[in-house]
Length: 88
Image 1 (cartoon, rainbow, N blue to C red):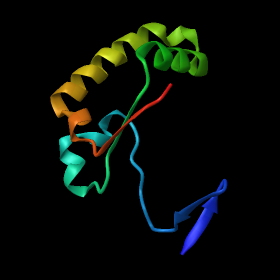
Image 2 (image 1 turned 120 degrees about the vertical axis):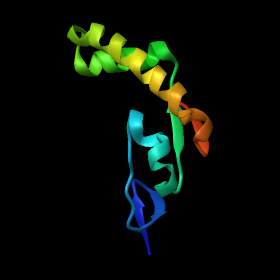
Image 3 (image 1 turned 135 degrees about the vertical axis):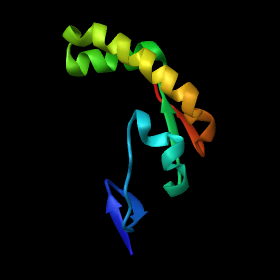
Image 4 (image 1 turned 60 degrees about the horizontal axis):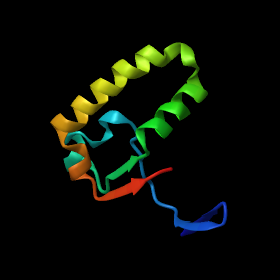
């Protein structure tokens, strides 16, 4: 069975999509069929967050970014991904 989503045909299967910093952690990998690593240049990603959520959270974003980088290094999230995509 196939469904069309904005002109793209895709298979209609029962799936779950996990998204976010922890989605690629070691604990989840045995249950994951496919892992994507999606990144954008740091300045682009930061600007998107600030424009979306407001400049009042800029200090928190800096703290979160440090946590995120430590987490990715510890979990080896990028190297464990099946595919790497670069956003712009």
